[in-house]
Length: 208
Image (cartoon, rainbow, N blue to C red; front, side):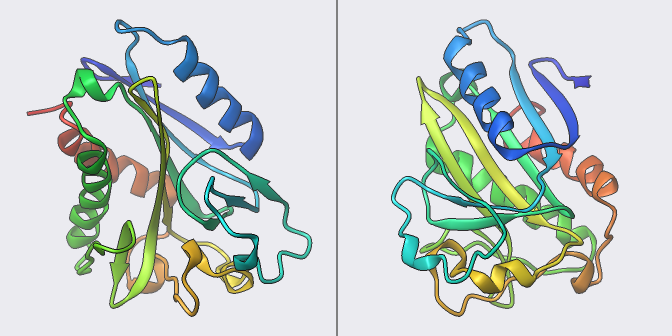
């Protein structure tokens, strides 16, 4: 666990989805104006998550991978080992961030990082996330409760991409996904998390 002036960084390793989700909810419900924000870096075992407005029709063939209905926005996505998941547990009022600013900050952090690896990535106005040549590299899904955020960013690093073929990722038919290692970037999650952290702290307004 690392601590900046007003944010705690936690590296949780490979953790089950449901208890981690419940922990985010519990943290958000019990926090007050003096509670320090936290950013969690982690991975999940294979799981599909379906957002509040998600349509089951986008689950094409989940087979043996569990499907969990959750309380973020967005449609269906996949989490699995080799994907870096970042959960920003932020008091948006204290950080003077709007929801759109939070989304942009998470996207821009990934865009800035992969630029260091010589990869040009972009956001998309009609679908939150980060894209390289039209293929999705990172997904976003957030929940705001009591003025605070949870859920967050899923950044494909070095994983089995096959489970994405069993869904319409984020509700889009024929949307291709990609991952950092296949684009020539590093495949080490710990390295990527370490190098992503300063960009997150900058864009989320924890550092000047």
